[in-house]
Image (cartoon, rainbow, N blue to C red; front, side):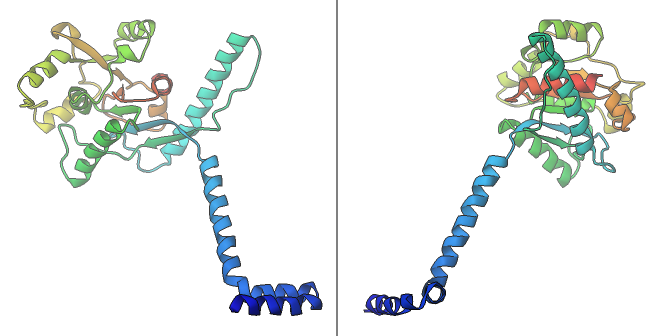
Length: 279
């Protein structure tokens, strides 16, 4: 038998010393050894990858922001993270009466500044893909914040993609935003009427695209009046004066609305980002 031959050879080789044993072992078992080595490398690499993978702190899409020329993702990540560290450190020190540095180094951020969706609805396959992506991310609970022009806020709001801000922000925060005239409302009674018609939804926007674009310019934009609604729900915050957007020349002409995804699993993080963008 082959095993007897190998055993016999080994008995003969081991009398010649360690070097001879290693050469003999490599001759017979190099394939097995390489397989084991590669298996160990793969397992170690996989474990290290899993252990080093950081959970998402927040995911946001900035529709029609115009962010194509700079690495806005990195810029916002750094600025937002710095602001969050400062905020957390301040809150912790206030609570504990001690200066303790806070850090967010264990989190990742996902920001999409290139997404585009023409006011009034998708106009080509790329925009259709963007619309489908937003729906998929909301359904999968992987999106937390959206900023967009008013017509897309209207459409996504009536498609129930945006959270009722009364479920996310405190009463004090909402009262302050109301006083500053920064809340964007939709009428939930409209959604009820559509549901009663068994999804025979009337068009959400019936205004020509040219009028939509003109009406969204900052100088022309008018917030929907909740007093004229049957069941007003705040689903957005006006961010047109955001220092971040101004500094990096995003949303340069249109009014911009920030919203929380209806399915967010990280409402506190969503509020943190919107508060940062409100400055």
